[in-house]
Image (cartoon, rainbow, N blue to C red):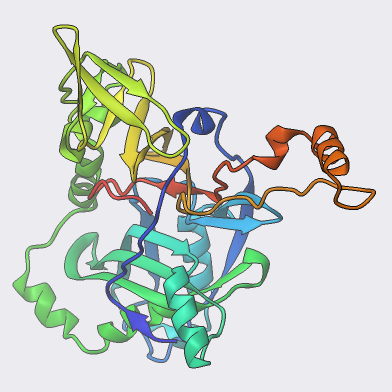
Length: 354
């Protein structure tokens, strides 16, 4: 499959706060990893992964049997990666090397391909089922408990679809390992300042030291930007929310007058956080050091086809009236929007959702 560096997915969201407040899905699906091919021998005696993602509880969502499942590696991502990679054939490692490899995982996320990508491949007649894996890694060489930063990986990969969500191939990591063959680790190590493990850990924990993650108190107000949300900087403590079938609105209250506020990131009602995405508001649920919510994938142009009443005895006026009366006028005129819901997570670096 081909590798792509940038993703662009356009989503349309049309749900209400009440729908989100019904609760989040708790179904989980245990997954395993299939090791990379190791096209190159590693100049290290072993590889050690540590998980420094904002949310370490899952690696994606999987729709199965009309339910949303959270993809969770067996034993957690760190254990799963360490066991899978280090159980590879011995010839994949240089067992006599005096250095090991440390890989800090900053992002590891699986998702289905965007609908427009699938349509494009199908039109070209070249579609093979695949998923998209986004990874963000920081790679260090370790020797005598001192660590040298080598490079970062921030890419997306198309990976072969895994059967029933049970097994995920890790060939994407082979790109990272192959890159190690193209650099002079000794030269880099001699030119760069060595770091301790504590220094690396402190650096990675800095991203989690945000007021919204550390201060559990909540105050009513609007977050104009994602930065305001992270720093719990509220504006307009007096506001009113109006929820609609298709569009939700937030009005600022000033001297008993109401003014529509069209652009803002989210708000807090004093008890819960909400995000504005598309034309609607969604209640956020904390997950690790991130937030998630149940949103909708379809636009409001999708409507349910009304049921049709059964009319007997031909098409006489009496028969039609009798049929409608028995069927119910409300059902006949039912044109409420229909949505395909799915979970989303907040990107805690950008404020976008995926």
